[in-house]
Length: 242
Image 1 (cartoon, one colour):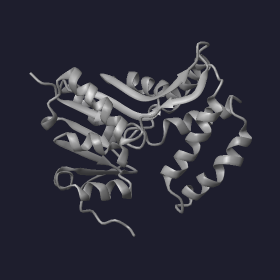
Image 2 (cartoon, rainbow, N blue to C red; image 1 turned 60 degrees about the vertical axis):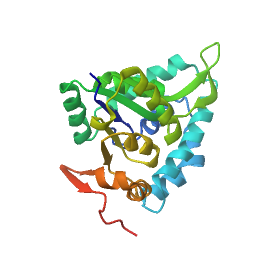
Image 3 (cartoon, rainbow, N blue to C red; image 1 turned 180 degrees about the horizontal axis):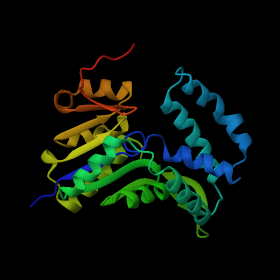
Image 4 (cartoon, helix red, strand yellow; image 1 turned 90 degrees about the vertical axis):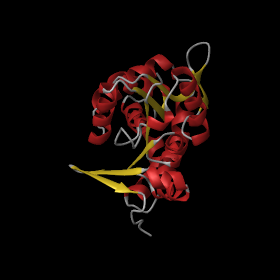
């Protein structure tokens, strides 16, 4: 018998923020990253997003470039200790809908996969916390001394997520027609396109427009919007603010 699977993005889909952002803040607290880096390279972009003038993806990309550069030469064992602190403190900061869906899938005997652009040393801890079958995150390359080289194998775009999806499909003999995928940005399109039950959670404008352009996705995708203590279930023809 084939396996029913549930594919989850993490940042913005399960986790109500970005694991990398939370880790970045902890690295500043532990003085691995100089606080001046935030003020000189990230703060202005963050404030533009916070005031709803800028785009969250632009803020995240800006921070990611700084994050990757600042980790170069740092030993992975120290970073993993701080990563554990992030999950211990922030790991429950998730959407109720997504958390409940994970538990439902597990109760049904479904395979649960986490595929995220966040660093693999953070994704692995979230996967352990929520009992995922397997996970993949962005790989941060280390040298022979276990120090970060500044090189990565990214996992935040649709193409690389598709590569991992193909790996999981082959390994677990997945019944795609009855499987589920959960995402919030265009990097998750490949996941949603493959399954019979696509769910977009708090999608951004670009993602929602992409769903509308695909006839099958437009017909099948459920839009979930969770705000405060209310969960809204919508179709993809929801009105978009100009």
